Length: 149
Image (tube, rainbow, N blue to C red; front, side):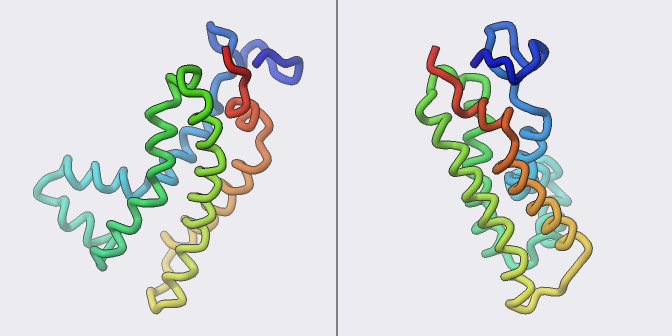
């Protein structure tokens, strides 16, 4: 999408908008359980200790993988978004819905009896910022609404 609203530095060599850096950070935030899963798998011996540290209740770990699915798909399709433009456009609402789920999840855990911790508060603040950024960033919105080449 070539627009006068964006600098030529915002475009790649094919004339498409580059995804903002914060988009990649947002994907990592949303896929945090997937990242933990990969780290636990890579560390072999300490993997179980790592999972128990963040998810003492193992059923929450498996549920925690679900909100990260749109982020995983967005990461995988980001380089080929021009090949699957309809699916790519559907990912933004899916990312917003997943972010809402993540935002509501932490307070629900606290209401169910989990102790309030610094990590939980930090994640809540990051989730609020991520949802706000997903909803308001014009460059990101334009990246998802680019015309079909």
